[in-house]
Amino acid sequence: MARTQEFDRDVVVRAARSLFWRAGFEGASIPALEEATGLSRSSIYNTFGSKRGLFDAAVQSYLDEVIRPRLRPLKDEVVAPGAMLTYLDGLQEAFTSPGSMSAANGCLLINTATAPVVRDDDVARVVSDYRAELRAAIGRGVAAYLDAAASDEQERLADAVTGLSIAAFALVRIAPSEAVRSLATARDLLTAARLSR
Amino acid sequence: MARTQEFDRDVVVRAARSLFWRAGFEGASIPALEEATGLSRSSIYNTFGSKRGLFDAAVQSYLDEVIRPRLRPLKDEVVAPGAMLTYLDGLQEAFTSPGSMSAANGCLLINTATAPVVRDDDVARVVSDYRAELRAAIGRGVAAYLDAAASDEQERLADAVTGLSIAAFALVRIAPSEAVRSLATARDLLTAARLSR
DNA sequence: TATATATTGGAAGGGTCGTTACAGAAACAG
DNA sequence: CTGTTTCTGTAACGACCCTTCCAATATATA
Image 1 (cartoon, helix red, strand yellow):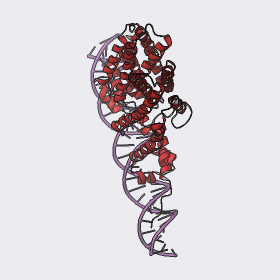
Image 2 (spheres, protein in one colour):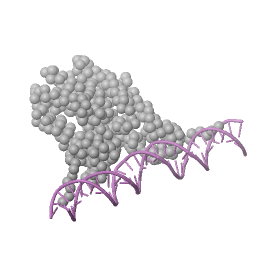
Image 3 (tube, chains in turn red, cyan, purple, yellow):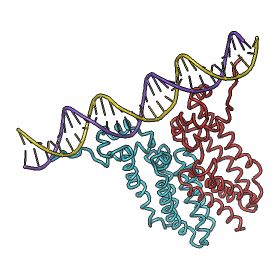
C-alpha cells in the first residue's frame, strides 16, 4: 500500500539526543537537528510533531539507554566490600575520559533543566529517583564495608558518599574539576572509614 | 556643556542582574531588560554597548555585591566551635526562604553557565575560588571542632563539608530538595564528629 | 502495471531576537 | 537666552527561530 519508513527511528532519536545533550534544548536548532539526524524538517515534524516531541523522545531514550543501564548494576550487586570504590572509580572514569557523559556533556537532564519547555518537577523526580537508587546501593556497599559499625554511622557515611556523587553529576559540565574532587572526597571517606577499623 | 545621565547606573545594573539571575542569559531578552531596568534600547546600547556588555556588568555586580560579601564573614571569623553549624544553617535559610538566592534563583553564574557567551573558564575559576575560600573557613571551623583529632581526619571532614556545600549551590535551582539534603548531610557529619569525642 | 498512501524537498509563513539609525527632547555652559 | 552636547523614543533592519504548506517523489499492494 504505502512505502515504508526509510530511517531507523531509534538511530534518529539517538542522534537528536546527542545534540540536545551537547547543545541544550534551545541550542539545538531545527537546522542543526536536521544535520544531526539526516532527516529533513518534513520528516521530523511528520514523525515527532514538534521540536518538543523530538526532545521528549530523546529524553526517554536517555532514561532508557543511559540512566537506567547505569543504575541496573547497582540494583543488587554492590554489596561486596570494595565494590563501592570500583563504582566511584567507574563514575570518575566516565566523567574524565571522552565519551557521552564526559565533562563536555554532563547530564542531559541537568543541562536542559533551565529550558522553559522542561518541567522542573520531572527533572527533580529523575534526580530524586537516581539519588534513591544510588543511596540504596551505596548503603549496602557501606554496610559491607563497616560491618561492625553503628548503623547511624553507616547511614551518615552512605549519605555523604551519595551526596558527593550526585554533586559530581550536577557539576561535571560547569566545573569539571569540582566534580572530580567531589568523587575523590567520597572515595577518601570510604577508604578512611575502612582503614579506621 | 551636556546634560547628565538621569539614571543611576548601579540601580540599572542591579535590575538587569536580577533578571539575568532569574531568566538566564538567553531568557532575558532586550524588551524584558527594558522593562526591568526602565531604560529604553537606546540608553542600554549607549551605556553598555551590547547585551553582552550589560551582562558582564551584571556579573561584576553579582561578584561584588553578592558573592564577595557572602565570603567575607568567612575570612577569619569561622573558628569558634559551632560557627560552622551556624554558617550551614544560614546557607540553608538562604536557599529555602524567598529571596535573591532562593530555590527559584540559585546561583547566577551556574544558571548562565551553559550560555554560549559565558566563558567556561570564568565560571570554573569563580567556583574554584569560592570553593577555596569555603574550604579554608570550613577547615578552620572543623579544626575548632576536632581539636584533638588527627589532622587527616580533620581534612577529610572539611573536604566533605565543603563538597556538600558546593553541591548545594549547583543543585539549588534544578533540584532544591537535593540541595537541602546536601546541607543537612554536611550538618550531620559535623555534629556526629563532634559528639563522637 | 496502476493506484493509493507515506515520505520527502523547497519555499515561505509569522514571530522574536539583537542591533542600528535618526530625529526630537533635555540640560548644561557661555 | 542661545548653542552645543548628550540622552532618549520610535522605527526599522537583517537574522534566526519554529512551524506549515504544497507539490513531487518513492514504495508497497492490488
